[in-house]
Length: 154
Image 1 (cartoon, rainbow, N blue to C red):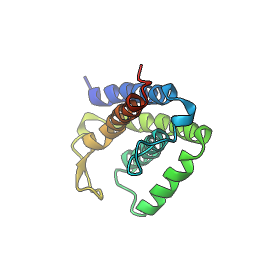
Image 2: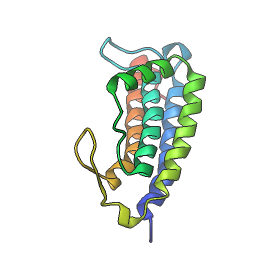
Image 3: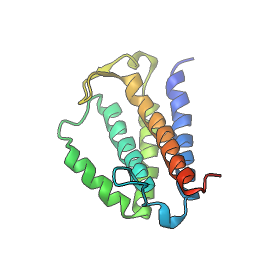
Image 4: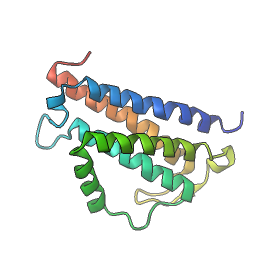
């Protein structure tokens, strides 16, 4: 079936994002910006990452290259800004999830082996377009771990 990976990821990615948001929503509101130690990330910070990277991954898929002007300083500033306002974060998360799903659906089976140079080394389009799904699943686990520490994992 043509685009089978694209079709799978176009369905699985929004489901994974909904699942990570559900994990976040199960946390007490006063613990969403809490972390178990100074070196640990908060749940809202992790959701901000999902929102940001869904957008940048969509851009990478569409442009078939990573942004050349990307800086970690810019990324950390955006994480901090989004972590301070759930409503703004949720709006961006929804918009960027829609954006990345649309981008994923443009990828054909022939595009899957296309290699894109990244700051992390060469990545195939298959790897790039799988990232939003994997990242949301990973952060669902991280947020559920915070919930387990708090004793509110249902």
